[in-house]
Length: 201
Image (cartoon, rainbow, N blue to C red; front, side):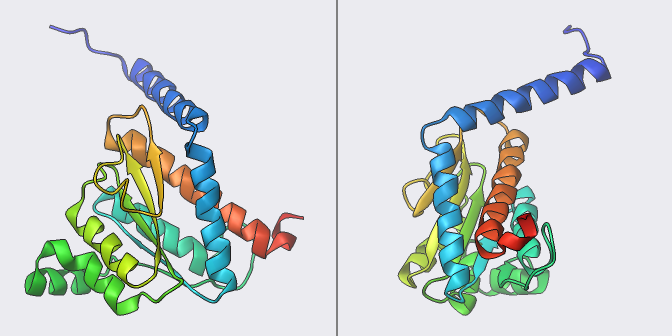
């Protein structure tokens, strides 16, 4: 029988693994350049009066909500509210799922709210979530830029989104999501620095 790891050893191992995943992302040739491209899309959309939309399942939905609230609320300092919404309203999701099936819950929301020039953040640790994939395809039909926060090999979403951001090395959703939230915060900071430089003086 394997020897049980102590709580302190388990915690240290968890932090060590997280550090390795972060280092692998920083060193990957497409990692940071893709994040920079995401920020560039965000700056352009906000300057043009467009909006962010975001979607995902489970923990990725929580990240989608976190992404949206940082724009409408406050990140570092006070500034104008910026338009962003996460597709997370349970009444809307259950209505769409009941009428059209769960695979359509995000695509229908893109169709309802999305306009050309907007940016859709599609989050999937596997890269294979059918409802996220359909949302991306609907966004492309409408001229909406798409960014994928993905894991593993990027899955089906990798080649579908305009800007795939894939977390290498990690094999579990928790480690992938830890990098996703770092990416989200980094992009928000980069966009704010462009639009509200006074907050970083």
